[in-house]
Image: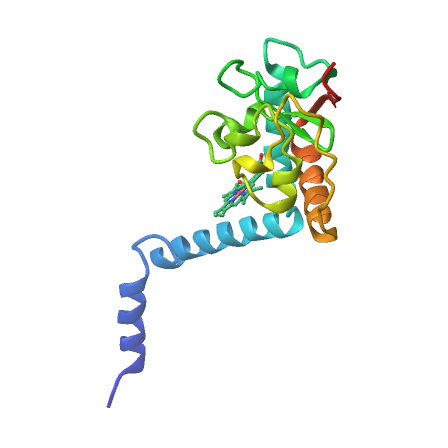
Length: 178
Ligand code: HEM
């Protein structure tokens, strides 16, 4: 006849470490599961926390620059040098507001995918989802009135504006050249 109690004992011995009552592999799996659950719970309860942290970091970065960020009036011509090459600060115009996007140098700095926008009014490009050169208005000409944009493009531009307002420091206004 099969002795089940002996089989049970052998099975237990194979699972449990010598002193501990908890099987070694179970405690490792449990720790991993608990860690994963806590992390997922944290992300679910605070979905915006990581993004906010990033945004706070960007604002702190701009605020911590040796040169204080002063709310200034820029024209297309005076904004142009803030392109990350001629000046370490990177500024960008959106709907006649100027944001300090220095913390996003990897996006807007030299060689970045959106470097066209640095030191320029990026409104039309953002609205149309294009970083083509012809989205930009010559800095010697009046500021783009954004005429001809569709409702969807204006909505897209407004969404970008909220993104920048949440992430970067608003540091000035964009007004016409003298
Ligand atoms: C090939 C298509 C594209 C890809 C794969 C792409 C990819 C990305 C990625 C990965 C980010 C970073 C998101 C983050 O970490 O927050 C980003 C941000 C951004 N993208 Fe694009 N993008 C594309 C097209 C465009 C176009 C056409 C525009 C033109 C307006 C654009 C403008 C931006 C801007 C302004 C940001 C925000 C950077 C910031 O937060 O300062 N992207 N893109």
